[in-house]
Length: 170
Image (spheres, helix red, strand yellow):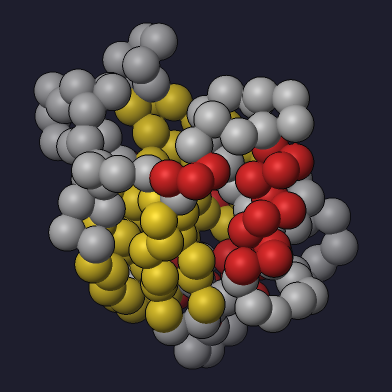
């Protein structure tokens, strides 16, 4: 890892309290291999033993590896969580812009915890996290919801939209 690399910063988001904090964790990226190793360690730290996989105590963790945005084709995002299907480790990987967007926002991992009382989406802009009302997007398809978010969030260039829920046709 490069000295003072943004990769060592972990963004913790609490949906229940609508708060966030950033912690420097160079130990994670020095000790564990890639986004998978980092996400597995963070899940071990943040997921309480015996938590309900569909409950607010089950975090979702997005992590990237040390080569993200530095080496072509080495940019994947891993997400980790306690699987509702098995009750064990749940893991998913994706390509596209998400890994580079996380790294360029200044983070090596994002830990999302808690539950919101209403539909929200997060807008992460460097050192700020905005909790936006997503009630009007509820039940909307991927294309339409993405278009509306892009129109409402300032800026252009490197960004990504990750969604959960049904893939309803727009």
